[in-house]
Amino acid sequence: MKEYKYFLIDIADYVATVTINNPKALNALSSPVVEEMISVIEELSAMTDEVRCVVITGAGEKSFVAGADIKEMYEMDPAQGKAYGILGSKAFQMIENMPQPVIAAVNGFALGGGCELAMACDIRIAADTASFAQPECGLGIIPGFAGTQRMARLCGKGFAKMMIYTCNRIKADEALAVGLVQKVVPLEELLPTAKKMASKIASNSPNAVKLAKSAINQGYEMDFVSGNLYESNLFGLCFANSDQVEGMGAFVNKGKATFTGKPLPKK
Ligand code: DAK
Image 1 (spheres, rainbow, N blue to C red):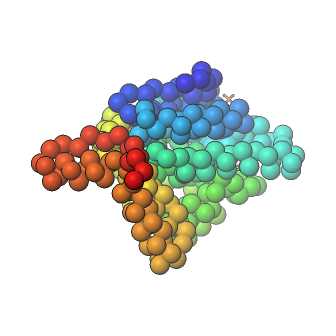
Image 2 (tube, rainbow, N blue to C red; image 1 turned 60 degrees about the vertical axis):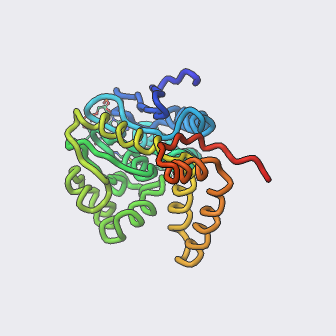
């Protein structure tokens, strides 16, 4: 992989651990950080043979991501604001659509764009020290990296409105109660827990996991019947991949499946 100024990347046993490394600004997402993030996602998305699951976290013990860079935004004119919004939204959509699942290991503040980044990931695991907020309305803006959309979809409109209108910060246990995160663990157990979950995902068929991600993400935006049809089409595609033969063959022959995610040769 390329060398990055703001990202540390470790790849082992099919799991890529990506650490956002801008600790002086509590890992705030300045434009250079977001530009690098896009490049990191592009690289990892193309590495499906080596990477089957991604864990994303923040450097240090205090902050996952403290939001978009307020000092940078303070100086922006409308055109620059728009360009920044497009850049950030592109990065988050790329995370949502990358072939591998992404687990956010939320190690501290997940504020504004930080909470939005976590919501763009497939699964969120929080340290018990983590906190979440959308403070934008207190800064004269609204969430701009799809926070209004993803929070309402993940936790319901009432919760999203309460969080966004009040700018109140909530703790990890409250985030768990509303489904904003899926698990809360002590800080020292955060990365081991996230990596263990990532390894479990990586042990399954990468083709099936990729298609399941697409079925859930795309189908969620459709009416039920269309989503069900979309799922059926992807289900059919499973049978064009060696993982289906491997997985079912292992069951039939009482063995253990070793998945590659490779397509079957065309008949
Ligand atoms: N941006 C820039 N720098 C930040 C930052 C941020 N979001 N958060 C913290 N820092 C910097 C601080 O300025 C400080 O730097 P120095 O002053 O030492 O140079 C350093 O990080 C340490 O922070 P503190 O000294 O403040 O540390 P504390 O422990 O006292 O407080 C805190 C931690 C996280 C509670 C506090 O730093 C804080 O309230 N930070 C701001 C959190 C926040 O409001 N975040 C939301 C940002 S708004 C858009 C799309 C999306 C967005 C915007 C536009 N478009 C469509 C255009 C998203 C907006 C947001 O995310």
